[in-house]
Image (tube, rainbow, N blue to C red; front, side, top):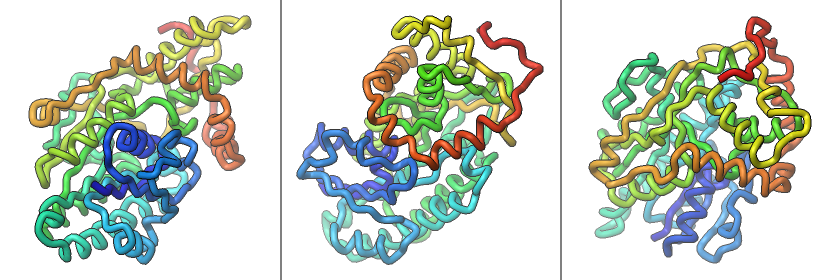
Length: 365
């Protein structure tokens, strides 16, 4: 099988590419614009494998997308390319509209034209797998039931609104044109190779450098945490065996507050690389909350578990231990992704944000 994977140099996309190359005989055409979060170093051994072909293309460029399909003639598409950081979407929503909505539209239209010309088994076997997020559902109260595939959409940020729009486009192209699609909505991913603007790698790296560990508000926001390799296995499963036109929610079964996550990271670091200055929790600092910050996300993964037999392999404790150890073992990768643009973003979004002085020291769990 020849797969075209968009966003394959990003955090989740690179995990998918690594798995396909290491564990299957599939040929992967890896399409990525290589924006700030795309990094070919994240592909590891897959990067130079003969069944891996990298093509630098921006999906907002319709002509370039058409050329991809003409040249590589894929059997299936897994669409992961997206602007994905909520804070960045608040500062600059236009890029999220252009990539997540216009880029998805380009892929759908080109895929539709390509698929319509296929015949026989090629046409029957073609799939368009759209990868989305649980944030399209909005947020939950502390005691609300978890999101299901039937939960109404209620996005809160420019990021989640743009992903919700792309989900609707994919469903419409299936209903109107018959394009064979599957959709997945996942919870918060973590693991190796994650860009260090996201919570878990940011806390690991700041702690190691003795920098403040900035936490929005009181750290009470709850997320369901999904280890990235578990997510990649789920995506492969859905593409191979998922029912056409169906949505599958993928969760980690690991709900924790942001503060609990940071305390867990500090505890691992205290055991692994103790700091002579004292416990890493001393670095926790509460900062003013971001606008529209969703309180809680939780995924009900009953459908993918019962229909496709998938469940996460990693607990939060085992996955977090692996993640912390990976960052400890790979300082060269971290330095290569820390560009000047990244440093400026961190300065604007965290360093210049008002400290929440109403909160006392955050050493208590």
